[in-house]
Image 1: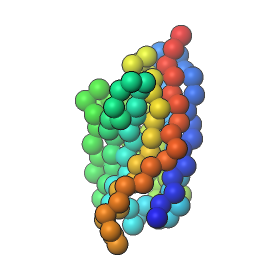
Image 2: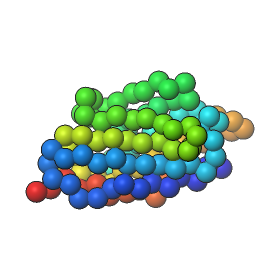
Image 3: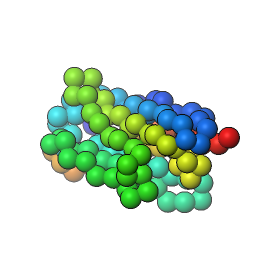
Image 4: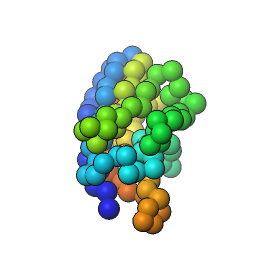
Length: 118
């Protein structure tokens, strides 16, 4: 099992920045990939960014060039640096861990609210 704890959400003005953190309960070396998803009210949960154990990254088109996902293996933590925030980035952001051993499974954090508003 993997427990995930997110932090760093809040209220920010358009054009501002926030950094989200996701602390995992076990070594992220053992996790195939970690990702950030977001869900706005009345909408589905969508992938924002992901990073694999081999440090490959993937981003949603809407955040390319503004958001950066990174990992600190020593701290078992994944970050999402969000710059040039827009009102449409407002959502609950969820951390996800996907493992493939001993069985394939997805784990989710509790979510952290990000609100972009003036």
